[in-house]
Amino acid sequence: MRRKIIFFVLFLHNYIYIYSNGRFGKTISDRPCLILESIGGKTGKLRKNVLVYLKEENLICIVASKGGNPKNPGWYHNLKNNPEAKIQIGRERFNVVAREIFDLERTEWWKKMDFMNNGVYEQYQNRTSRKIPIMLLEIT
Image 1 (cartoon, helix red, strand yellow):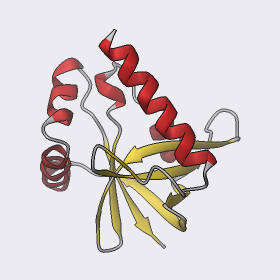
Image 2 (cartoon, one colour):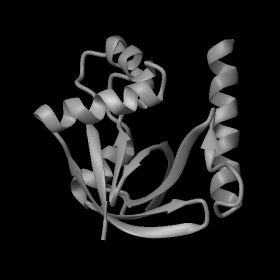
Image 3 (cartoon, helix red, strand yellow):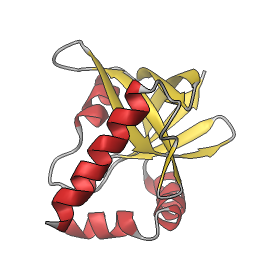
């Protein structure tokens, strides 16, 4: 029951953030959120996803956790297929280029993201056998 409530709250938050065009929903549980606009790898259609992020200078980090699900989220595949995307933070929009990070760079960002999210990403990693990918979005 608890998971259903959490899912509903997240769904409602995402809906409000997207359909208010960034006016409401910039944060969830005191964590900053962005709207990622990517092109569907299979459909070619515009896809919007609300994601928690961490920004340092012109780099924005997002984690493809999907709550510890065995499969990567669709937006991850979309960015791998077409790394050029757009993000919206509040009312501001930016063009970005995405790249997956590995090794030491991944470890450094993982620690920052997990700390910011009170250890939730480590919990997600323990739920799945896949190594959860991390993407950096560079503002262009």
